[in-house]
Length: 212
Image 1 (cartoon, rainbow, N blue to C red):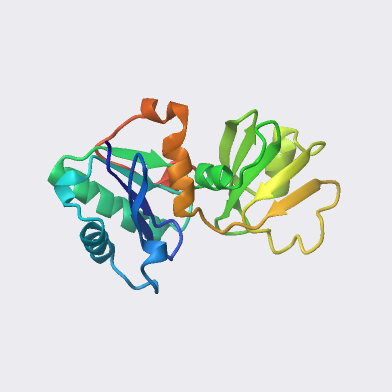
Image 2 (spheres, rainbow, N blue to C red):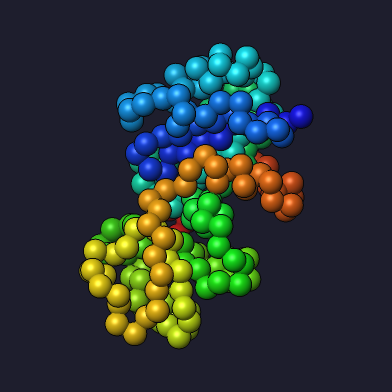
């Protein structure tokens, strides 16, 4: 049975879990408080509470963003270091995909998963028919128009842009206020039929640095 380490650091409140095919062995959101706890401390506690050793970890699933770049890098650096030291394969997880999975929305919905960047821009993933059609960075109204989605009823997953105090003119939007993915989203990800075909890599990298 595969034992996986889940790492979510794309938000400032880091989360870590150990999971096998039957469910969670340990999850930090049920056992830790505060944002100043180091990942190596969290992992040590998780291994102790779940009666596991580092050598029992078969795979690392790490959130590579988009999200807070400095915090995301912390999780990726930890994953890469552990992977290199113990020869454990890594699977990269997209934070927006995790947020969409967590929201339990029908696949035929028109869905935008979004996370704040800077200068009023957002990382935005456009989902329809259960697939991500595009992952990009820009101003929400501009990107929605570029995709030709302005005539669809859209579910927006993520923080609402501050300038959208009221409904944006000309757009039919329903909001799901989700700041970052939870550990439950990782469990949904690994349960996907296509998860077994995802690339296992030896070095993860932030999505933020790939999208300009």
